[in-house]
Length: 566
Ligand code: THG
Image (cartoon, rainbow, N blue to C red; front, side, top):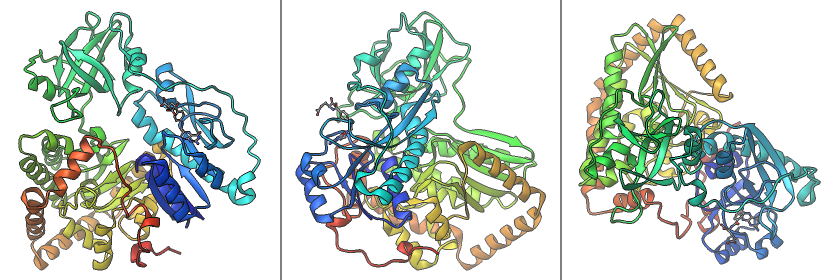
């Protein structure tokens, strides 16, 4: 089928839909919701059999809905309606929630329901729930709805009775924290319902900030609303029955449009606020765990972004554990993101973004080199969540890469202003792909499902498993390696590395990459700096790039990566 994805942006769910539909052989094009005339033009040009809106806030015009069946993904159960569904569900503390695909009609979210799926709620932020439960349920709905459509056409009998109500758009007032009365749970729900975006506006000692990335602060308390102190980059504020950590803050404005989300203490220092350092601290961002002879590295960095310091700390942890007895290591990343590489927010706020780019990529490269040279450990990259850009190439330093089905990879740097990229990709990628496939991959710009990444040999396996069973299967696999062929594998690893170095010094690859990167950072073409600015400040999109809007671009050549497997 020809399917047009109509979306406010190419967010994680839009990317998930894109890959699921592409993998099932459909002809997909994407149009951003810029203006109704542009949407109509896209429909008239592409002539889709179906329009799907994975992430849309504005009304699809009657001209479009009269022409073609349009589906809206609604992040709520059947019958629930309105533009802030998940926000309200978190704020109210719903025990279970869902995702629904409904047909767009003139009245908002009131059309026939094509599919719906429910899940138990988790105590987590909106963006975490959206990336995990909402997205997984949306894919279940997509498959169900497509089946109905393919069997019965646009007049399929849906048979799902809506039972819910319209809830208006949530406001800042709805989430305003009342420190004198709110419990820890209430405060957390308010912040979680607004995290990643827009955050809850509150204050630290009179300085206004949007609060993000909040957690309960075990064993801490004080006068309601009192700021108790800081630790590990986070600030602690008391509610009536305890306290919370706020790990990230965003100022109202920083003179240059939308403020940047950064570790709380960084902004507090910048405001000249010195707060007492508490004995307690929030959960670590780098955790080593040894289980049955397997060493796990967890690094659940916020948004998967790895700053210079975080790269250095992770490398330090790896060096520290090298002397440990575990011979098999698992790089687990985090549950919402495996890794997205460079910390563009830190780079954006630096005095010299170009210098900080160099620092950050150097620290990433040092980390990758550390892993490449770990010849006495067999390293498994276990991707339970998405990876992009430098994060993908970091995973290539492992000996085995296994992803959970449903994981999306963006194995390229080009969307960040044509960045050349480093992380030893010129060494690591040709270990897995032939030169033409490697070149195509780096040119591609599009997301790729784990399944397809496995199909082209970019990764070694895909486990079809839920998040918990993925952990179990990775552990079983790691143990089987540990108890089996481990010494042979490590022997081979050392020999391969020596042979590679014999052909061309591995250091020469990164030297070449860094020469290109310096041009990106300091050169004549400012594309990288502009792309980063727009990305960090969430600048509204004014057009759909041609790599997504296929209907506006000439037909692509038949490339290796686009060929269907089996
Ligand atoms: N039908 C059509 N288009 C749609 C939907 C639909 N586009 C996306 C939309 N569903 C997703 N759901 C909503 C539900 C309510 C509102 C927005 C998206 C909403 N919006 C305004 C607001 O934000 O306050 C108010 C009205 C307005 O400005 O139009 O209430 O089902 N065809």
